[in-house]
Length: 140
Image 1 (tube, helix red, strand yellow):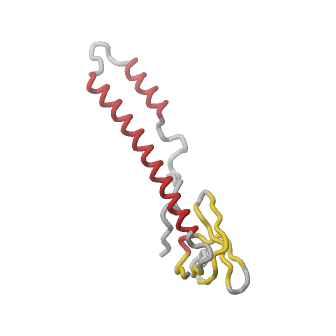
Image 2: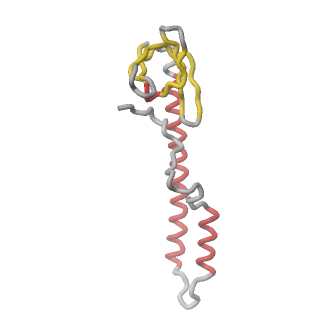
């Protein structure tokens, strides 16, 4: 069973959800103002309810900032993991997991899906696109 490196599965989104299914600050403010505008004048919103909704919004906003910070830390950690493999000999499985090869890491490429390694094998060819989840053994 392949296990991805920390942070290699960043930027994932549920495919079933449309891209605009998240509520942002502007949407919340519009909803909040509409609620105030169309409230029953005989039974106006209680100040406690008003402050509770405002506090909930602030809490959600802080959670989003925390999640973004953690995601940034995970991305940095994954970069550090892959950079530590430069000039090391690794044993790696093929993408389909059927064969195993050994070689020295010669380069690292970064893209939206994380790091991928270029490995010079003993057969004098270079294999590119090796993901961290394919690495099975590392030797100095």
